Image 1 (cartoon, rainbow, N blue to C red):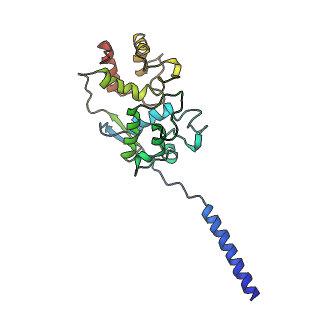
Image 2 (cartoon, rainbow, N blue to C red):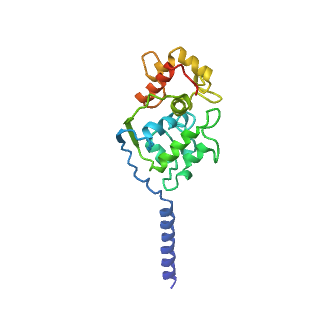
Image 3 (cartoon, rainbow, N blue to C red):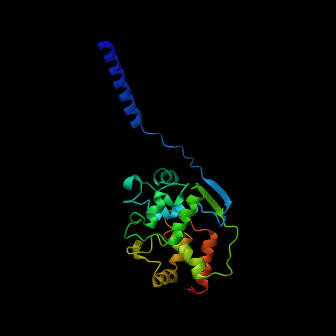
Length: 234
């Protein structure tokens, strides 16, 4: 009887050890297909990770001291599609509850942290829409139609600056002390020819936007025509 009890006790002990170690075993990361889905046409109702989302993350989040590989604050890395999907808390079933979205809308703590400028409503909406559309690793090549006949600052030019320029060049501590949300500084940047040289990535000019693909030909031409028209602010 004592021998049976000993055997049963030993069996239960081994079962307990197995259960503990089985419970502690890390589940493997889900397989994420990071193949880029390329579209020849940029559809207006679609948000593209490579064109729209990554440039914003590269300039405001995936930087030294924040969410690059070297720092990885709170274990979050936001430098490419795989890192965003693995550490950004993306929830396509409930996009507004995604960690990365809650961070930029400031539901927990303001991200990007001061003195970096907070994301604009346009940028926040782009992120939410991208997640809602399935958080795909997509990219488009050309706009199907570029309207250069009715260009205004508010409707045509400002959204380009908000998307590509303000993440670095606005707020309390703008990069190179250049605040492009300040129209006086923007005008000086235009008058000396630096803006056009930078967005066209001409030799001798620092390419803008930083850390992303160049502006599309339509976006560049929109800014150029606005400048040719005297940079009206309406």
